[in-house]
Image (cartoon, helix red, strand yellow):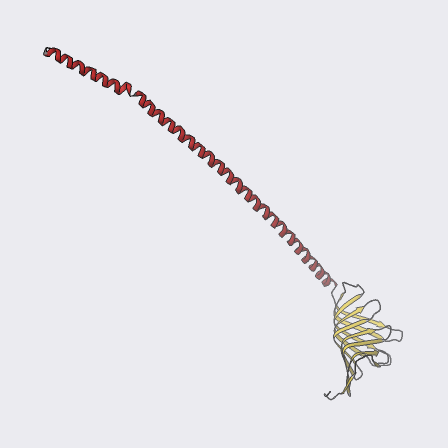
Length: 253
């Protein structure tokens, strides 16, 4: 074999090798590249699918949380509304009670009268005068006048006057009878009577003192539970069932 033929053979193999390399590099490696691209595509699809599922789960979970929050808010609003209703009902009751109390006080103020004077005369010409700084009609009985800071005078034709004073009294329009109470004091002639209650009955011309009765004159002090005073004669009758205590008026018992 000549050198020329050998060089040609070597050149031929080089050309074949180059062509083979080009083929394997650009044409035969195509399926691997496609497979790689395909694998990447599958991975992307899986990833997108997973992300989509997560997004759907998150949306469902979010909707569930929102619904629970809305239900919770609705329950709170319902409880708040119930509490407001109860508070409103209680407030209305308080307002009604206060309104009734104010109406009662207003009515009492409207009924209040100052500088009261009543005079009654019987068949014998005896007169009974009652005076008070303040008075108002009783809410329980329109025929009763409730008096404060009271003074009374019983004047007889042939006898001295009987003077009465007390913190309070009830005067009856119908029969002109009076009931004095609280710090009652009666003075006539030389006698002074103190007691808790003193009822004057004009129609029967008698007066009854009761509860812690003390009768004083210049000579003696008498303690009793109940005594009756004749308005005309000024005679005293002791009606107490308890023992009567009589002392000399010298400060000793």
